Amino acid sequence: MNQTFEQLKQHNWTNFMTHHLRNWYGSWTIYSPEGEVMESFVGSRCSISDAEQTHITQTNVYMYDNGTEEEKVFHNTPNSLINGLADKTAQASFMYMFDQGSAIWTVNRFEPEELFAVEFWFRYQELRHSLLVMYNSDGELTKTVSVREEDLQKPCDHWTLNPELIPDRDILNGEEGLAITSRLGQIGRGKV
Image (cartoon, rainbow, N blue to C red):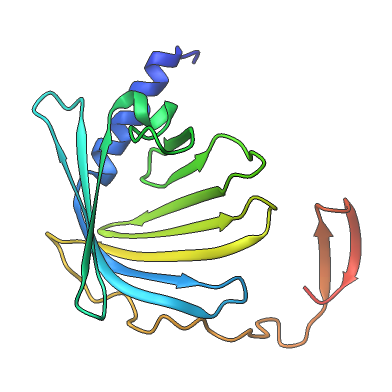
């Protein structure tokens, strides 16, 4: 099926409205490039649409352990998902919303002297987990942010309160297997 750009844009917007127009509450954990917890806090992302469903106002509220709160407001339209955030100070970016509820947001391209970031959203029923990966202007990883959320209308207790990463595990119990590395395009033997 050959769809026009406008049809694809509308399909993307419909997926956004269907899967992400909710009031989400969760925990944000910021990790260093080495996997150490740098910061952890709770927050909410609440989205409201206008009656015509052509504009969404998203309000993020972050609540820190020291008792302070920070609020950020974002405005989305069908064009902003494709052409970047409505905030004119942000780099050009795009967001693609998949039919089953997963999504990706990223800046359009890596620019010298600019940050590069990508965020992935994964949905399962009333749960959402997003992972934001940020790189500096030299292409070095600066931090990873994990956001574990649930729909405020249907709270659950599926998420752990412990933000520490689990240690490396030998899930193959010492077995060796075949590894294909895309970097070298070669096949080699060794631990997988």
